[in-house]
Each structure stands twice: as structure tokens, then as C-alpha cells.
Length: 118
Image 1 (cartoon, rainbow, N blue to C red):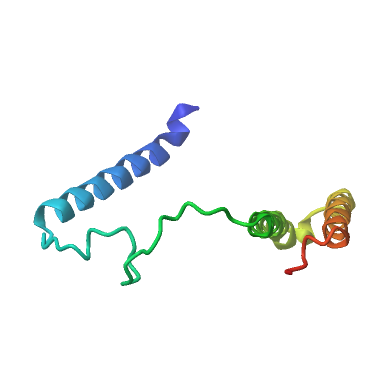
Image 2: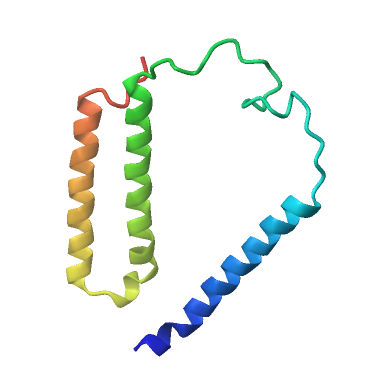
């Protein structure tokens, strides 16, 4: 049983080894020219005028959560769509139930105004 996964283990060890070698080589051989502009935490070229300690509006978090939910729905639909021809009616109705529950959640969010950007 474990011998079936030996190739995956070898691949993970090789990937970790190559990544480690590249990181060490870039640290040792890369140019080191520090200056004050490289040491500031912002890379946009402007000097920060205040600390980023302000609060964010809830709508930003809500938009992010809705994006993740839609993204995960698409992830679940791709394998189903790829194997649609080989699957039976039971799987079709299961996916339709999943989409119906998802659409109910979408309609609830829409009615509550979660998609309105004021």
C-alpha cells in the first residue's frame, strides 16, 4: 500500500530539495546592495504617511467571502462537467440540488443587499 505512494514521496523530496537549493543559492550568490528605499515596507515608491491601523468596512470582507463561495462552486462544477456523459441521472439530480441550494443562498444575499456597493 505505501509502496504505491513512493513516487509521490520522491517527487516531494526532490521539489523541496531543489527549492531549498535555489533559496540558498540566491541568498549566497545574489547581489546585496541595501539602501534606505529598499528597507521601507511599501514598494510603491511613496513614503507612508500613517500606519495602516485603520478599520476596513465590512463590505470588503463580504465581497471577499462571496467571491470565495462562487469560486468554490465553480471548482465543484468543473469535474462534474468534464465527466457529465459518463455519470448517471442520480449525479445529475445531486448537482441540480447543489445548484438550487447555492442559488437560494445567492438570492438571500441579493435580497439582504450584500451585492450593493454603496
